[in-house]
Amino acid sequence: MKKIIYFIVFFSFFMGNLQNNVLGQECKKTKNIINLQSIEVNGYSGYGIHVIDTYSPQWSGSGVFIDYRGDPNSVLYPGELVFWGHKGSANIASFANTDPSGYAAITFRGIDPWNSKLGTYEHMALGYGAQVPYGRRSGRLNWIENSSFDRNNSPTAEPTAFTIQQTGGNPLNGFFKEVISASQGSNSIELINHDNFPTGLDGLSIRSVIDYGLFPPGTTVVSGSGKKHLILSNNSIASSTKTSIIIFNPTYKQFYPIVLDGGGTIDFWSYKNAHSGKFVGSPIFTVNFNDETVRIKSKPVTKSKENYTVSDTDCGTTILLDGPTDKTVNFTKNLPIGCRFTLTQVGTGPVMVTSDDPKILHWYGNRRKFGPYNIPGQYASIIIEIKSMDIATIERGQ
Image (cartoon, rainbow, N blue to C red; front, top):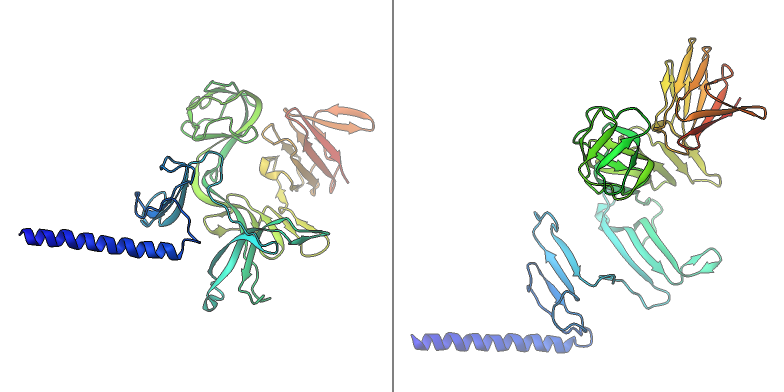
C-alpha cells in the first residue's frame, strides 16, 4: 500500500514539473509578446484570464479580469466575454493603432442573408483614422459605419439599415400628459393645467418629459387619481414649476424611433408603429438626402368633419376641417412649447379656434387681440405656434 502511495506522489510531482516546464518553455517563446505580472486561468467564477495591474501586485480591484461566462441561460452575461475593471474614471479597454495611415477601429461581422454563401460581411464599424480626409482637412476623423463590405467593393451590396433603438418600459399604450409643479424632497405633485388629474392613474408609471430625471427611475403613482394632488412612490429630486409629465402603463419592448434606412433617408417613427422588429404604416417624418436638395416628407394630413381637439401628435402636421356645418378646434396646455400646426378650412362650414389656456394671441394690423379666432373662409389656412405655457400665436395664411 505504501508503495502505491509513493508512486502516486512521485507521478503527481513528475507531471507537475513537466507541465510547469512546458508552460515555462511556451512563456519563453512568447516573452517578447506577453509581459504580464500574473495570469490566472479559471481563477474566478467564470473561465478567463486575470491581468493584474503592474502597479498593484495584489488583486485589489485595480486590474482587468477577462472572463468568459459560458452559460447561455445567464440573465446578466449569457455566453459573453466580459471585461471587468475597477479603476474609477479610467477606461477598461482601448483599441490603438500606431500606424499613421492605419485605422483604430472595431468591426462587426455577420452572415448576410442575401449573400450567405460568401461568408461573413462587415456590416458595422466604429473607428478613428489619423489620415482619413474630410473636406480640405486631412486626418482626425471618427466614424460610425453601416456597411456591406467583403473587400470586393460590390456595388450590388447595399449598406445595412441603422436604428437608434430603445429597450425597456416605454409608453406604448395610451398615456396622460399633464403640467405639474413639484417640490424637492416631496412625494406630492400638484396639477396646474386642469382642476383634477384623470381617474385610474394609481399604480401607473410617471416620468418628466422636460425636466428629465425629476423623479427617480421606477417612480409610480400611489394615490390621488381624480384629485388635484398625486402622491408618488418616490420624492422629487428637485423643485420644478410648470413642467410636463407623462403618466403611463409601461410596456417592455424594443422601439426604433430613428432609422437610417440605407437608401439615403432618415425615418422618424412613433413608438406605436415601430417596435419588436416590426414597422407598421409610414414614418411620422422622413428626410431624404438623395439629391442636392434635402426633401422632407412630413406626416400625412389629418382630415376631420367634426369638432377637433389638438394633441401633441398633431405638432408639425396639417389638420383639414371639412363639411358644411360650424366646427370648433380647441387646444390646451398639454401641447409642448414650440409645437406648430396648420389648420385649413376645406369645407363651407365656418371654423373657430378656441383655447382657454394658453391664451390665443392674434393681430389685426398693428393691434393685438386675445381670444377665439375665426378662420377667414373656405380654403384659408392659419399656423398656430405654442410660444409658452400661457401664449399661443396665430399666423394668418391664405
